[in-house]
Structures are given as structure tokens and as C-alpha cells.
Image (tube, rainbow, N blue to C red; front, side, top):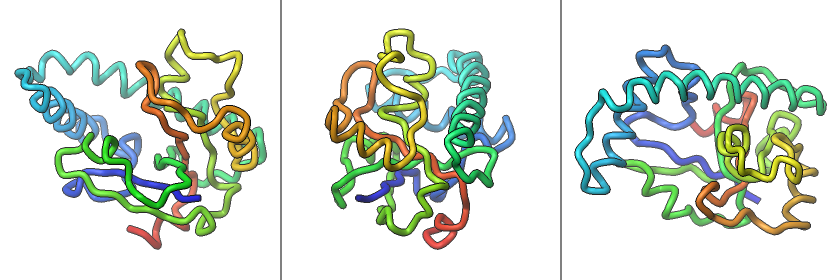
Length: 184
């Protein structure tokens, strides 16, 4: 098993938008939104995204606090306020679709064995979509799983399928800088 991390080269790897000031986070948000909108051949208007950014920034912090609390309840060892996001995969090759999400996309792939698994939580699918999407099967899936739990879920249901409410991946939340610092 491997953990994949995707990022914009100019932003460097292993940065959490929640660790940034609101202005720094807004700048990255606008940069990503502009790239994705223009990639579709549409015109980007930053004013259209200011209110959206504020709402998403607040919601993301709420989500991350919920992830943190639930992981601690399951015995997780948490030394960060906000996680780094990676993707669990049995494949060592990058996902081209996720790489194309970034203007100058790059990736790092790390074997799971390099992490203390009590510092990593998982979501079966995108945690943001799960937390806020009223259509998501909340009665079927938990927001946070341990490594052993997510492996059991994958064995039962298979790997997450891409659909309109989900990017199609198992999300990993890294709650420690220890292993990450070796890959910066």
C-alpha cells in the first residue's frame, strides 16, 4: 500500500491550507479556482469566489476539527491541529486525473510502512463531500477510520468509485510531521 500526495510545484508539498493565514489561503484558493475555470475555457472573476472561499474556509476548519476529535476517540495519536491530505492506493503509479487538478502538478508516493499508523486516519471517499453532502450514505460509512478499519471497508465494498459526489479515492489524513519531514 502507498500514500500519494499531489500538489502544485510552486506551493511545495505537504502544506495544509488550514495552517495558513486567511489571506494566504485565499490566494491559493483563487489561484486554483482560476486555473480550473480557465482550463474549462471560461472567464474567471475573483469576486464570484470571495464569498465561496470564506464559507469553504470555515467549513474546512469545522470538518478538520471533527476528523481530529473522531480520530482521537479511536485512539489516534494527533500532534497537529490540521492534517495533511494524501490518498491511499495499492498502486505505485500516480492518478493522472488527480495530477491534472493542478496547473503545475507534482506528486510524492510514500510506502504506508513509513508511517506510524496511529497517526493516520482515513475516509472512504472525500471527507469534505462526506461531511457536507446530504446525499452521501452517512448511515453506511463513517467519517473516520483507522488503517485496519479502512482495509476492512475496502475488502467489503472495494475501492471508492468516482461519481458526481466523490473523486473516487480513499483519503488519508496525516496528523504528525515525523514521517512527512523525511519527504519534504
